Image (cartoon, rainbow, N blue to C red; front, side, top):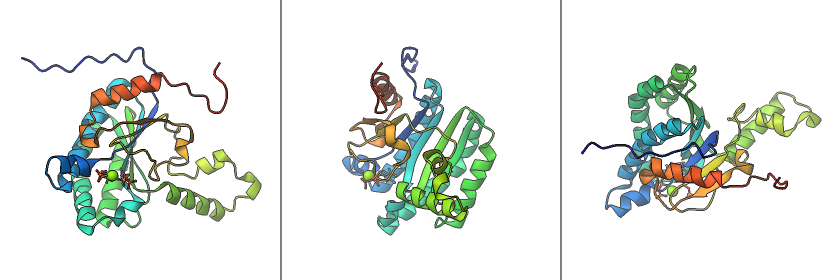
Length: 242
Ligand code: IPE
Ligand code: IPE
Ligand code: MG
């Protein structure tokens, strides 16, 4: 039998322009299988490929993924090192395919404090793909929402902006996500129900979709389910439904 991708019709769905994902549960996925946590991280990173493909297929324009938080440095050194190794390898192996697919890769977070080689790899990836417009893939790496707000505040003060010029839109323009629309849909895998310092400014009015599925098992069908759920939401932004 020839394996055929299941037909998933999106013509009746509202497609969020910007989807953000907290890719959580790699460790528990591995534990469930009696594997080391590192195997979960490998499986997690590998799972990005089908999810990127599905975003392109469904017409999502921006995908922002939470890969490593400012708090994740607090994990055991061996796990942090292992994660960095995986990220470096994946950047090397996947960047050309992403480029050919028309994906623009962009980094959110602080590259200071990250290994020099990693830093230049990230910069090269952004440079190589900067003209691509099929999907914008933002990778939040060494990212923390509070850190982002503190850094934006510093830059505003350094620029000599007068207090009465500080507005929400001005503040937005100093964030890592400057120029991007806020996420419409924010997905968290693994059953946790918290934001964990991810896009705390930008997600003010995002729709949340929480699923117990561990990230390495989050497939095209699950993304589709999230879009079905999003379609049914009534986004009021503090106002009233028409
Ligand atoms: C997410 O999976 C990956 C990172 C935070 C880097 P976890 O490693 O947090 O997996 P759990 O939550 O322990 O299962
Ligand atoms: C959030 O997951 C960070 C990433 C997915 C990169 P964590 O596993 O670090 O979050 P907590 O500790 O459960 O809040
Ligand atoms: Mg976790």
